[in-house]
Length: 238
Image (cartoon, rainbow, N blue to C red; front, side, top):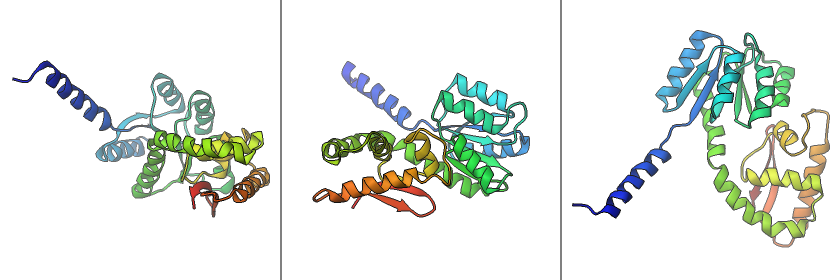
């Protein structure tokens, strides 16, 4: 007969396993009921926990009531459109958002990123592509805690040597928090420069160039800022 401490250990192991295997929770805000149901069924089949809403007002209420790991957000929503939902959402949380829309023009994509979207899919899209994008974002957020621990070690060893300006320091903070991950320019503008992305504004590129020079000037530096063509920047080991 197992002892008391063996029983406690068994309960702890069961709890830990359940916690580790807890599915990621995705909120679907889409007014097309057929597409909403299709996405719901497909994501649940892939092992995700899902909630769904059919308009922007319901979506905001759901976001205020509980936390989600990711949100799929249609732009053309009744009552409150998707960009308005996204704008209000960003005042509440930093939950990753993928915009789903029939609007594929460049200006529409830019507006979505300026408002705070993490990714953008134009309808019609394949479920395979959607799943790949969801997995990429969730993988980044899943590894966020480990990245923070790792990056703080790098951060501690570099800070005194780099002599960063306040703005450069903020950019490096965001890159370190997402070490080895490619960050888009709109994301860096929003999180590092604290302003909206403008395709004609070269201030981010200028700051990145100065950070590169300071890193390069360090003896035996193993860290560099890489430009990922068409996607953004990432901090990585060299």
